Length: 228
Image (tube, rainbow, N blue to C red):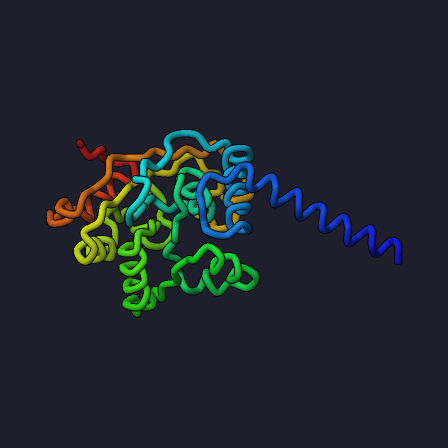
C-alpha cells in the first residue's frame, strides 16, 4: 500500500512539474491552463530541441486573421505555434484529426477538421465563424505535405475563396531547416535547425488579382519574393 502511495505521489508531482514548467514557457493564452502548459512545452521543444530561429509571426493583438505557411513535415504546426504570441486554430485533414490517441489533443486545441474528399463546406463555415469572432486560423494552402522540389507551385483556391468571404488579412511564413521532410512523424523526431521567415501580410484586395494563387505559392516555396 505504501508503495502505491509513493507511485501516486510521484505521478502527481511529475504532472505538477510538467504543468508548472509549461506555464512558465507559455506565451499565448489558449483559455485553458492545460492547453497553455502544452503551448509552453511546444515552445521549449521547438526552440530547444529543434533549435528554431528566425522571425515571430507579426500578428495584431486582436482581431481575426489567417496564418499560412509551406508544409514540409508534421513538425510545421508546432513551429507556427512556437512563433506566435496568439493561439492558432489549425485547419486539419479529417483523417489526421481522427487519428487514434490524438483526437483529444486536436479537440483541446480547437482544430477544425476538413474532409479532403471534397465536402469542405462545413469546415469553411467554421473557419469563417472563427475569424469573424476574432480568432486566428492557421492553414497550409498547398494542401497536404508539399516539398519545395515538387512541380506544382500554385496554392489551392480555398484560401482565395475564404478571403473573399472574410475580407481578412493573411500572414504568410516559410519554414526551412527541418530534417525528415516529407514525413508526418520523422520531422518531429529528427533534430534539425528549423527556421521560420515571416513575410509582409496580404490584405484582402490583393486576392482580387488573377495570379494570387501562383504568387503566394511561389513565396511559400522560396521561389520568389513578393515586394511590399
